[in-house]
Length: 138
Length: 90
Image (cartoon, rainbow over all chains, first blue to last red; front, side, top):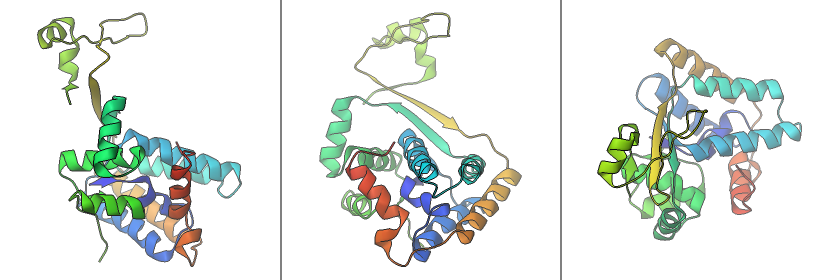
């Protein structure tokens, strides 16, 4: 399953209890071997970027940030590092009707025929329109 | 979209594929890559079942220990969306 940064950030930063449950469910199912998590490199950029902002604003401690990254490393993500052409980024974004960053996640899920875990409303809508399954917690 | 695998990156393979690959070993280029191809490298984080279980348990503990907000608009998901919309993330 491809995982969007929005589905991982509620593990360490404040969100609603339902969204926290969603993030925790991904981790619990991964621990049970029910999910293998795939991320594009932009996920690293987004996670590091948001966490750095929160540490700078003192909403999060450096120690917590470091531990969060260390524990994420322990999950065994499969990381796709890709050098996209601008024409490909443009084409994917236009076809999927989403922003370029969102399209990187969505096009990876579509190509690998995997579901996507995301809490982002826009990305969920674009995924459904593209026929990409969205991970749900029941 | 064409993806070159690492086995394509030798000069012989690159020539056969009609592409060029440039890789550096730190001391200098060991090949040349055409600018109009996409490259993909798949990396798997090293872990063990035991470490995966321990990390998952700790992450869930961290998630349960942090405060929650009552409205989605005040949560990190909504904030991430705003940052993405402004191009301020990453």
